[in-house]
Image (cartoon, rainbow, N blue to C red):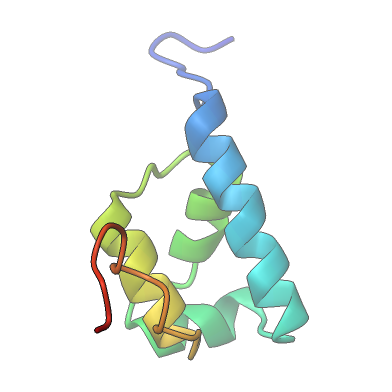
Length: 81
């Protein structure tokens, strides 16, 4: 392996796999996803493979960009009534 090589950690890979499934269900290419998210064309691929770890806020931005439902996100521990 090259000097300085770091394999992605399991958590980043797991999140990336879930984001990839969502992107594929929505039939978005990497280019389409990058355009929706206003990112470089290779950024979605790096995220999905775990080489670009994402913070929870970034995951929320990705899901919002993909048009995901927001009703349950961010409501942990709160009541609606």
